[in-house]
Length: 79
Image (cartoon, rainbow, N blue to C red):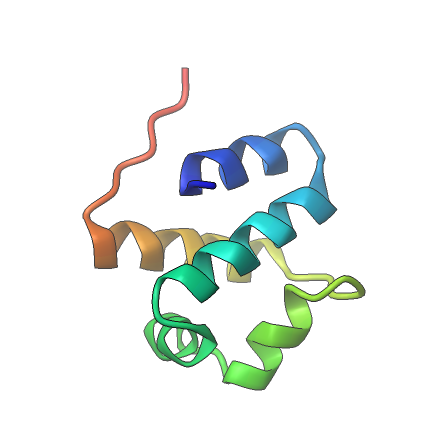
């Protein structure tokens, strides 16, 4: 899975799949503590918002995507 896959899932209104992809990416790249610190969201809140019953705000989702892009020098392009 990749960040681009998660972005595409969000744009296609596949919210549960996008949250699952983000969870997998977070686990593969240092875990929730690293991501939470980078995003500026408490780890417990990040875990909850991306959980099956979570409802992350657009602001928080964008912060997660920006964090990944900055930490891993990834650029998403949409066509």
